Length: 93
Image (tube, rainbow, N blue to C red; front, side):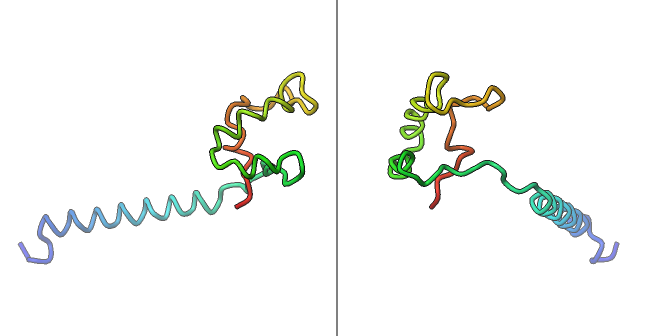
């Protein structure tokens, strides 16, 4: 058996090829992903306090005041569950 074709080198070569293929697949997946379409958290007088609160969970406890079923801007029926608002609606910065 030649030193260039040792089982250890063959295994390492296969691992390198598998890693390269996996890396290319992940890169293509990320490059072909659709653009983010969710609107960010507005920067207006009403939402400005939410930008100042550093803890997302604490900020989200106040969303239902306006966006609950009886609020001034209730969520549409097809909206995902309202308990992780800032997961989709990102704050700037």
